[in-house]
Length: 289
Ligand SMILES: NC(=O)c1ccc[n+]([C@@H]2O[C@H](COP(=O)([O-])OP(=O)(O)OC[C@H]3O[C@@H](n4cnc5c(N)ncnc54)[C@H](O)[C@@H]3O)[C@@H](O)[C@H]2O)c1
Image 1 (cartoon, rainbow, N blue to C red):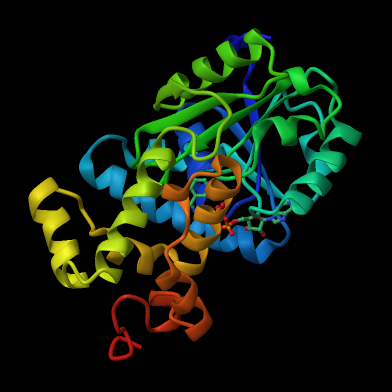
Image 2: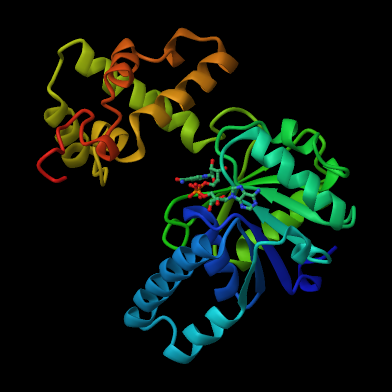
């Protein structure tokens, strides 16, 4: 299959990532068929897409008419069967191997073996997921970053079973939808998180060791390295529990002490200090609530 043959793409999952991928694919002129669990989810996703496109119109990158045309290219269904005959399907459902397994079984039941599947998983092995589908040669990882319309990178990760033609097509697709791609092997964290996770771990260790306060660690990285957010602020924003889960996946795979989760994270989770969503993490947000 060639990129020119693809006029329609599928998007399984319309959460934060799915909505973003649907938007950029539609902006690139592709018809996008979105599937998620309910109309309510779709209502939220559509609102996010419209808001994001309105910002693009304000910037003058597209006209209001182009915005309407972009929105009209996106359709929604709760039925996986609506993705039958769609040649290229992105997947961004919950980060749970059982949820993904069930979804791919449903997709495989309606899609032909030439369908390309591109998963956006952050932490599950692409090779393990490829083994779930009837044609693993057409399975690949395309790891986007949040918020998708803003972040320019996509990591393209072939599974051990991925055909070279699938990789080439994924790279072409990334370019078509406005992203810069890098490729890497199927290993935990790919490139970005492989570098970012140890950085987060070390920030927590500095705090544990009493080298500096949370505020000073965050200020140091924002003002000294131009990071938009400090590492501990970031943990609070993304969820301390989610970070802990990702660190443990790294540690399990790498078996290296430098990837071991600091004890402070474990204790924070036990105490319920899982970040902004709980009103308390490295910082106290109770006033905000
Ligand atoms: N959020 C991030 O920063 C980020 C960044 C890169 C990659 N990812 C990856 O993207 C994927 C999605 O993450 P997210 O943050 O968008 O999650 P999310 O929770 O915002 O969205 C997941 C969506 O999947 C839907 N869903 C669940 N089961 C489904 C099914 N069987 N069929 C159709 N839809 C189903 C849910 O209703 C929900 O709308 C995960 O694999 C995650 O690891 C997330």
